[in-house]
Amino acid sequence: MRVRSFAGAAVAAALVVPLQLGAAPATPAEVTQAAAPVQQARAAATSLRVITYNIRFGEFGLANLASDIRKTGASIAVLQEVDNRTASGGVHQAKNLARRLGWHVAYDANSRKSFGWRGNAVISKYPIVATNRFTLPQPEGTERRGLMIARVKVGTKKLNVWVTHLQPGRGRLMQARAVRDRIGTPRCATVLGGDFNAGPEQQEHNVLDTHLVDLWKAVGTGDGDTNKRGTARIDFLYTRRVTKVSSWVAPLRHSDHRAVIGNVRVASANSC
Image 1: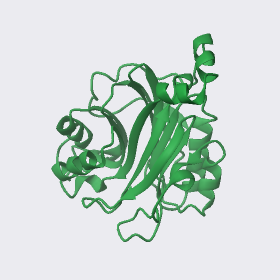
Image 2: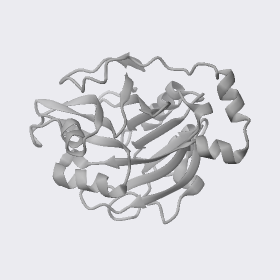
Image 3: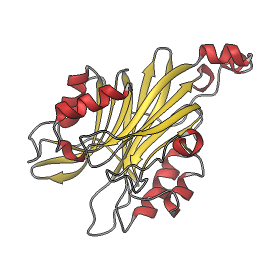
Image 4: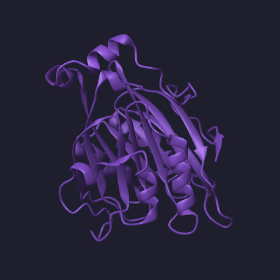
């Protein structure tokens, strides 16, 4: 898996700092806070709602998708199947959604489609202060897939938000291993969202479970199925070094996927 810079249209001006992976050691103040009573730690933690949502190329309308995201109450959205100036609309969909919501945006162009690009995005109510993009292993004859990290600054705290979309067939396990190896064992607050095209019983999730926690499995309610028919769970939020609060699946109307919603808390001691 190689590191790559963004190709195609420019992203928002906030995305100017390449992200160097790995968190600095905790400062004495952070260590002191981590050792404080539980009540104090909770008071110091920042609550966040994150969603992962495959938007199916914006087929059902960007205004409708923006409304979907707004209705969830999320402040960070991890998106897949996001087009940039393709025949499916001729607009930069990630920027368009971010503008409708008044949010920040990071886009990862993965593959050429109809004189444009298709890829993944992170849009956030809070500033995105750094990003990096990586190409996943690509078996011959398959679509190029990527992994992106966006560092989001929420007040005085920062967390790493990752997004990916794995192959529906051949090469998926190899890509899952590449995602695991790139993220490693997180040393600070981390969320990974994506369409993994694999159910929880499949080997790809055994791989990802090595260093990360399936949020819905840990604290979820409802059936968890994420395809439109409600028969399969293929979209996931994974976390590490956050307090897991709750998770559920929202049957939003404007995609062939449902959105996975997660509530987490980020403590100062786990800030990136």
